[in-house]
Image 1 (cartoon, one colour):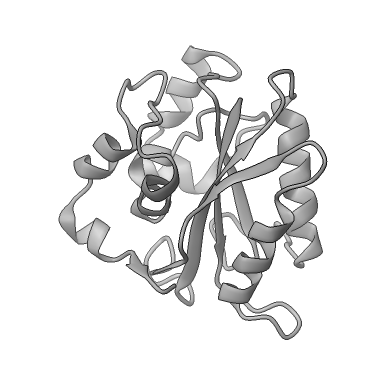
Image 2 (image 1 turned 30 degrees about the horizontal axis):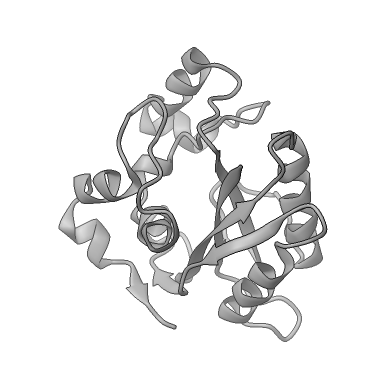
Length: 187
């Protein structure tokens, strides 16, 4: 089975710049349980929401995981990597040394289609202030963010959102050309 992850950083950690942090974090993703199948190039994007901090460096990766892997265990692995790079969860959508989002695990919808749909359809003001108390898969903002979809299109262009029934490329094509143009390859 495959897991899709997105990475972002816009603050240095120790002597490492955000692009070095993302490169190092990509190298940390694999372990004895997970293998990195594909990694995207690095991309520079404006902070989200716009004007909230320095530009981000973003990337995406596909992990091969055991078919019986618990998505919570995958998420814990990602959080452990974030912690190694000084991640603190002080402010929603704030600046950070490293953010790794679990975007999808195969075609799994968690915890259920109604909950995923409710979080996906939250009004923008609620998106900025509410945080789910459980893992939501696929990630409820996946289809809205060029900084996720552009790197993801390099590594999993044909993955299909199990509820929207659109591929990564179709979701990316649905975004405005201005949003897509803000995501610039740096490596």
